[in-house]
Structure formats: structure tokens, C-alpha cells
Image 1 (cartoon, rainbow, N blue to C red):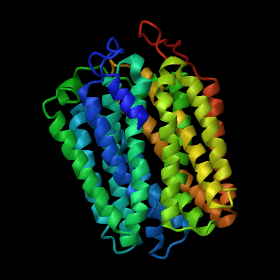
Image 2: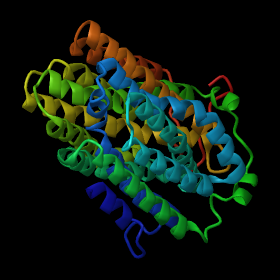
Image 3: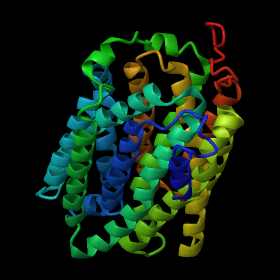
Length: 420
């Protein structure tokens, strides 16, 4: 919350930082919408695996429900990138929110595991639409020297919602495991309305604006060592933060610690709280110290904590390690996203490049829960969380050889030779 308030305060007229580029209204709208979306997403996170198991399936099948959402995001990402380049970010963003709202409401009325799997998977189509659109707007609008702070403020808003969401979701589960899905659908409808009415008169993110910018191809982007490293760290982050954390933390809390959905929700909220704490400084540091040092630190902290999570034997330690893992994610994400934005730049349209980065994250979110679930069924939770730490280590090694993308004093990106 502190990072969010301070960031907006720095954009007010008459402040000491008035000489800095002001935060555009469109980004403020996206930040507000992200907060609403995150509350809804957090509502279903602690109950989704247990809701799946209520249909009589094992841990692996419950984890597949989490992966189904990421799988359809992955499959539809190339098409989502094309839609952004042709139609512009704004209409694709609103349409994506509406699709997720309808599919989430349908999950509440699922009669069996198969229906839940289909409905949850359909939501991934809309999710990839609004995710790529939001990233595209941030890349296009944010000044180069503020990209770390902009992505940090956006992530802060999302994670503040993520803190409240799991806690409320655990409480709502007392009224039935289907109730959080209906509340989530309502939150998405609110977010869609906010974006539509607040940005309806803006020319940013429209078809005309999209057609005016040259396209940066994925082939060009992968020549950059920083973009290649971001693809690997995106995979590791998806595996840990969007896959294993969502799929196995609730199951671990119930199976090993003997806790219910309330503790699972609190653990997810503690992870988000640790991330929000790190975001109070990580975005600013990414703009001053560089993207690479923050990415390396975040990967090391998050990877070590996730590896240790499966070794915890009591609720207190479990919650403490969850906070540390969240801090690592908070250090990593603003710098990682700012590095991708640096590669694209303000003067290029990078819908497909952003889609490829998202696909790397979703690939981790897909295979993470499935492989970790198989390890749980065959061995133990310790093996599953340990493998999660190994993926972070692989990404860390990739980033050690990557270039620094932070802009220089003249706000011109220091681009490497074509070989990257």
C-alpha cells in the first residue's frame, strides 16, 4: 500500500518530482482495475484445488485444474498478440475481462470435474487477452526511466488485491466452495466497466494507434540476451508463483499441516504480503541500480524459499517461509517486466513479443503443478517444492550472462550487437 500511495503522490502537480514524467491517466485506470481483478482472483485461489477434489479426484487431477487455465492462456497467446496489434489494447482488454467473468460464473455451476475443467480452461482465453493488453499499454505509455516504478505500482495494486482476496475467499468458503466463483465474476464485471467508461474517450490503445507503430518481431527480440533470459525467468516464475503456489500450497496445508482452507488462504495472503512489501522499493531500485541485480536477487530469494516450503512442519514456519518467497517474487517481477519493456521500447508495437513472454510464464504455470503433483503422489511434497527451487536456479544462471537493459541518462536504451 505504501508503494502504491507514494507512487501516485509523486505524480501530483507541485510535488518535488514534478520534473519527472507524470503518470498518465490510462495507467492509473489500469492500476485500479488490477486491484479489483486481483481481489476476485484471490477469492478462488484457496478453494479451487479443494473444489476440484470435491468431485473425487486425486492431487494430480486437482493440480490439472490450475494448469488448464494456464494451458488455454498459452495456446491463445499468439492469437491474443495478433488481436492487440490489429485492434489495439483497449477493446481487447475489455473483451478479455468479460470472457473470464462469464467462464468463472459457469464454474460455480459445474456439475462434475469435466465441466469445471472446461469452464476454467475457457477463462484462460479471456485472461491472456487482458493480460497482454495491459502489458502493451504499460510498455507504450510508461516513460523509459520510470518503467520499474510503473510496473511496481501496477504489481502493488494487483498484490494488494491478492492479499485481501485469499483471506476473503477462505471465509467465503464457509458458505460453500462455489460462492467465491460468483463473487469473482462480479469483480471482473466491475473492472470491465471501470476500464470501458474511463478510457472510452482515449485514443491510446485503439485500432488507429496500433496501426501507427512498427512491429517488433519475436525473431528480433530473441537476439537480445536479456529477452532470452526473461523467457527463462518467466518460466520459473510461472512454475513457482502461478503454478505450484496456487495448486500445492492449499493441498500441503491440508495434507501435511492438517489445516483447512482458512490457513491456505492466509498462506497465499502472506505470500502476497511479502511481495507487496518488496514492491515498496524494488521498482524504484530497478530504475536506479538496474534490472539485472534485482532479477538475480529475486530469483535467489524466491527459489530458496520455495525449496524450503515443503520442509516446514508447522503452520508458523509455513507462513514465515511463504512471506520470504513472496519477497523474492516482489524483487523479481518489476525488474523482469521492465527489462522486457526496455527491449520493446515506446516506439514499437510488441504484441507478439509480449505474448511470447507470457507464454513462457504460462508454460511454467502449466507444467509446474502437473510435474509437482506427480512428485507428491510418487514421493513427497519436499521433492515437489525442491524441484521448484531448481527451476529458479536455472533462470538465475541464464541471467548471469544477460545484458543490463536499464536506459542511460539520455533515456536511450543501451542495445547490444545483434548477437545479444
